[in-house]
Image (cartoon, rainbow, N blue to C red; front, side, top):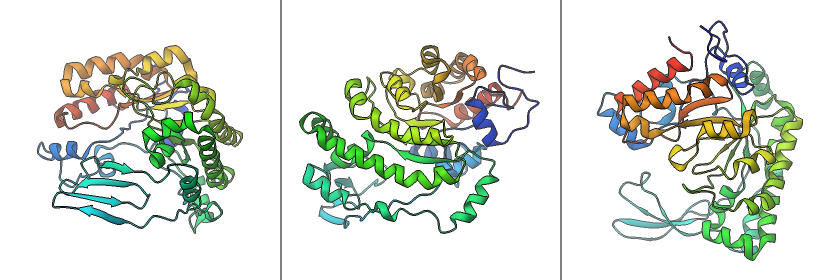
Length: 373
């Protein structure tokens, strides 16, 4: 039986399904994908019956049977002269190190890779350090795979969506300066911000040009992570002034070459930034964190089919159990059946979720998206 845009009589591959769902066209089923899991989640599930060889997100995607989506991207290398990795101080428990990206941080030796480092110093502090950092990039040496001509022919036959990393601005600059210094610089030295964003724009346009011109791409991806639970780290006024014009230069180039889906990854409450991203040509949003106040239903009601959506399934429903899972997915059912939306958990699945709850969630979701009756 046909339900909204779900028509089980169709037989589509992952690429066709991805493009049609975001064009509000009929699909055999809505793409079956998930964002991933924290390491502690998989460790817990190993004690609850998950095979121990399922020990990272890529393996878990295969194990749970998800399809290709927001993962295949043209491999592009932007040469960067890394900093010398240097241990600056250590004791039995902690180590302070300057990493290859120039950031100085302190880590705990026990549990390295699971605990969050304490950031002590960032490589860009002012114009002088920015000019030095900028020289570490070799934009004339941007490289594509040695078998690029072969790869292009393979891409013509692909059955999965293929994209390109288009960059991002705030998240990138925060990793160079640290959040506090970056925010102060918007006010104290706005020309430095403009120079950084201008350089970033030229970098990304130069990096993606060959791919965009020579391959029929399906999407571009952006990373920002620039929102807290209560709202954006940067005011909408400053976002419009400092970021929208640079976004537009890249999204316009992409659109002129047939790339109309621009996916931005930002945690937290993105509600105030959505209209500005749309103005800038970024039109697909994820992971839509429910506990931060982001609701895919509300976004569709406000922006209509202009906003494409991924995520938005409240992770807490998976913690609470079957009744909460049923209610959450039923709440989202009309949006799923309308199209322009791929449902999945609104971030990585946390270790509070029992494996049995997750398997139940997948069973119910797959029924609603048209994978089973």
